[in-house]
Each structure stands twice: as structure tokens, then as C-alpha cells.
Image 1: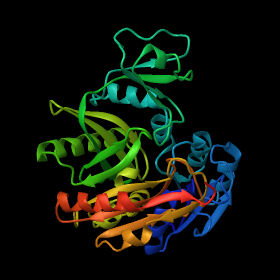
Image 2 (image 1 turned 45 degrees about the vertical axis):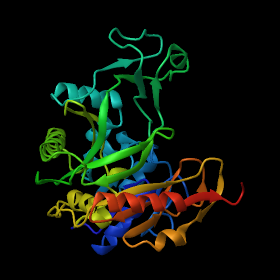
Image 3 (image 1 turned 180 degrees about the horizontal axis):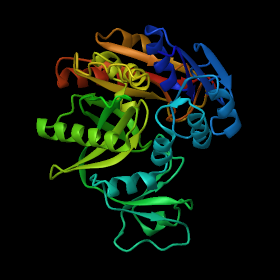
Image 4 (image 1 turned 90 degrees about the vertical axis):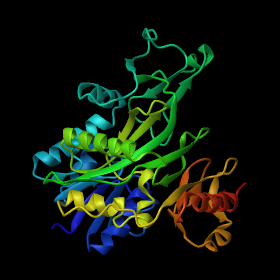
Length: 376
């Protein structure tokens, strides 16, 4: 088994991947443009450089037998060349190329009979396609992340402030829940998936505020979501970890919203809640090891800790001591020195035997723990 892996991106996902890699005596070496990225002080190796630059990625990747990513916005062309030279790149460059373009994602769902919302591809200068009546959603095909690159068009006035870059226009879905399934596949084709989680979004920031597992859904819907996730990763012939996000409609229909080919915010609870975390599972998958037990040890919830509105500068955490007094609460701070509104600064996992107990603890965490700045 290779003991040295190159990782493109050195953010919080890499930091949590690094913590699991240490248990398996695996060295992770990171490439990131930010010299103060969360992985910079703890990794076995850290190189400063742009993960979108062909030559930088190529020269970095040639030092390793296995390359992986913690974000999709990388030089796929360099990864294709590394793969051609014999390096194992997981997830595969062709998968990254498809998933990082939301237009290609939607076409993949359509071509493979995967249920998804009605959509159309759009470029500036084109009229709104027939069949798209306000309200609808505009999503940038490339570059959107953590709620950025998405606009809800509720009026002609909002359409006047549209993105002008190539986009996907998507019909509004009258959903009752947003769900996510994390699924993994190794090079032998073995597939394992976690229980679905239910996500609660912050409408203003357009990112997950908290999620809980198991989701409050029927066994039939849970199995259907897992089967769709299994079908997607198999049809992609992908090696690695895949997060599949769903809308659940009032009629009980599951529609795939988006997917991410890496550890995902909706899977952070697995560190404490499951026998195998999503980060360990990712390592097992890309190294073609037996996939781990995805069973739930105890139900739980995960809350994102984000920068408070009105604060920007050196990060300061208030209320931490109050939160740490609560049994079954686990705090993960990502080591980011600078905060700004809605920037992900950490997360908190809350364990409990029943959903009511979990939500009571979530309320305590939300009331006390805040990330502010000394400069405001």
C-alpha cells in the first residue's frame, strides 16, 4: 500500500483527512495556494502553489503514486497527464471534469435516467427557454461553491441581476426535505454507503446550517436514496467518495440536486456517529482497501460554525467553554486565522439517543458558540 499520497487542496477537508491518515500511518502531502491553509502546519508535506495551474499540479503530482483532491476546481488537464504517466488519480480526472461542470452533471442525470429537476443550459444573449416561468434557479456551470454561484429568480427585477456566465437554469422544486447520501467505491468495484442525512439550510448564506442522522424519512425512501447513489457511482465507474444531494417532494419523489466527488459537509458527523468516518472511507477507497463499516453508532447532528455577520479579521471564538460543558458535544475548529461573514470556521457534532435530545443540544450550541473578530 502506498504510504505517501498527494492531495490537491489544503482546506478543512484535507485537515480532517489528515487526522484519519495518521491512524493508518499514511503520509499526506498537500498543495494549496494559501500558505496559511488549515493543513499547512500539520501535514507531512505542504507546498504553496495554485491547484488550477497545469505545470504546478504536474510537478507536484509526479512525486506520488496516488493523487486525490479535496475540491473539484483543479487542473484536470494536469491530472489527465499524470494518469497517462501511470499515477493513480482518484477520483479519476474524467469524473472531476464532469462533476465540476453543473451542466455536464445535469446531462449525465438525464442520459442515465437519474431523476432530477427540469433544467436547461443557458448562455448570455439567449432568451429564457420556453417552459421556464419565474420563479426558477440559476446556477453557474463552473466555480460555484458553498452557496456561491446560485441565484433564485423570483421576479424580472432579479433576472436583470443574473449571472452572465454559462449557467444551468433549473425549475423550482417544491420539496419538503433536503437529503444527502455519502457513497464510496474502491477499484475492485465494492460499494458501501452511509445512512441518509437530513439537511437544514441557512437561506441567507445558502449553505448547510445543520444536519442530522438518521434522516426523518421512511425506510423505503432511505433505501431508494441509497440505491440511486449506488447507481450513480457505478455508472460513473468512479473510485473514491461521492456525496449525492437530493430533494424529497411531497409526493415522495427523490430528485438528485447535485453531487460532490470528495468528502462533504453533509458527512462530517460520521467522525463521531459512525464506525467508519467518511474521511477514513475515502482513504480506504482510493487505496483499494476493504471499505469500512458505515453503521451508525449513535444518532447525531452536525452544525457548521461560520463567521458572524458584521465581523471580518482575526478569528475569536466566544461561548466555547459553555458548549464544551455539554455531554456528547464534539467541537472541530479548522485553524483558519481570519474570519468573515458565513465563512466555514469549524463544525460541532452533537450525539444523542433521540432526535428531541439532539435538537435540544443543538439549540445550546447555536445560542452560545460564535466566531467573531477582534477588529470589529
